[in-house]
Image (cartoon, rainbow, N blue to C red; front, side, top):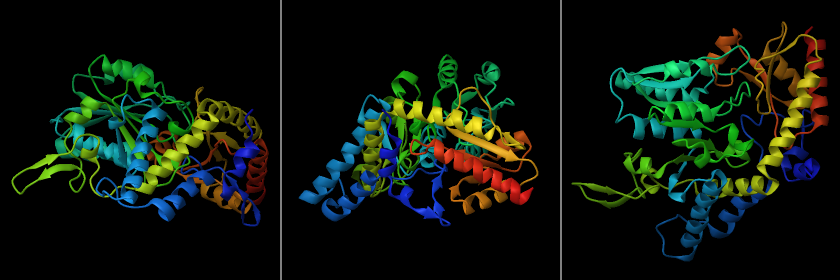
Length: 405
């Protein structure tokens, strides 16, 4: 059985009050809270095992190195990559996208080539491609949105042209909750030998990920989105692609030999990990992935879908509330607007009731423009949330209407 009360005890922050009220944290799409196991792993590293990695012959360095590299193996297993060398540690999804744009695509891109993204992308999966297109004289093309928050994949065949050099799309929208038909996108792109990058920042915590089954060329995610520390994430790329790519940054640990005449680069994945890495972050992220695996990502998915259904039912009864994004296949994210009330006011009053929600454009300004709204209030549920909390959220929304009506 899925014991949410037992799970909640693993998260110290959930035992605290905010504004004198029990904390109801529903901003997990921005960043998840951390279980005690993750907190302890970081504390234990710095208390007992810490040293710089890969370089020292002494015990502490060897211990830290072993923990760091076993974390890479944990990531590999979690997303079912073929080999740990296909896992590059990065600061997060954003750096992963930038790395692919700079190291993979930039050397290949020519004037009038095309980069295909979607209208629902997070800014982090828009701006790196936009900057690259501007540098190289290439074009950014867009898979359009439909009114319900799905992508208009009927347009995909005409958007995939002989000029398309990469497709970069999110698996799950951070502002709408839409789960995209990634398999179809990858299949149609690969039919034309076009590589595909999947932004897994949102999907990683909510559904099983199998990069071999997906057959994506790149997959990126952030540790802090899946109950791990901030400042760490992973880029998966097929080994043969990584081998062909130029280094993203230069420095220590990404080299084999250095002279003033020529530098010989390290093997993958180390070729892309210049400088002292976020050792504690990688170890903490691996502990978070193990924690999720122990509960079972499929169990989490089922529980969150039940929560989502209950929340939609409860919030749908509130007069003047309009959902933004009603795709049939959604993750546990609800965006809404209240008639005549700005989302920032909604969020401020809900916070006074102890409810932590996100308001704004959620780094998806093109989505807001599509719906002709400035912002939404977003409730993003995780497996530590409860139906009782959803009732509290509904009560706090009604409080907003009373105060602002």
